[in-house]
Length: 204
Image (cartoon, rainbow, N blue to C red; front, side, top):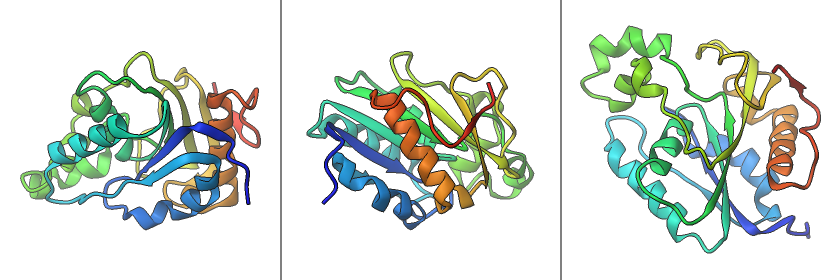
């Protein structure tokens, strides 16, 4: 049995828009034995009550039986995490690994907003540059993992703190061994067990 590497730390995996939770199961399987507790957070992603989703994640963070959380987010899941953390004060120490996060208006969302925007709050947010550029609280340590062959998102600014690039696409990064290795290295760096992320190139 794998030794628990982070005994006082929990892991919450948060998928993105139109991405069922099973897409993060390879990462969940690779990481779950290293933490005191792990949560594969799932929620309705279309025509849903986004405020309720944000509140559910906030409550999960607050109620967890650990001293600190690592939030592992993908795509729009990163916005959900930011919204949850910005909705109130938290006593836990929070760290984040953001995989291909939504940090600027998404071109595809802008194109479909006239047709689908009134039905989906997620699409309205992703098409709005001001709405989607929310930030994590200053106390949150964060590493961003970007994908070299990204076709859905606009590239993040080159001066973004702790930005790393992986040879993957927006969704394949969740399944590729290189993506899992990069995530593990980022978590080790944040949690203080590794001096640097291994196996990926820094772009900043």
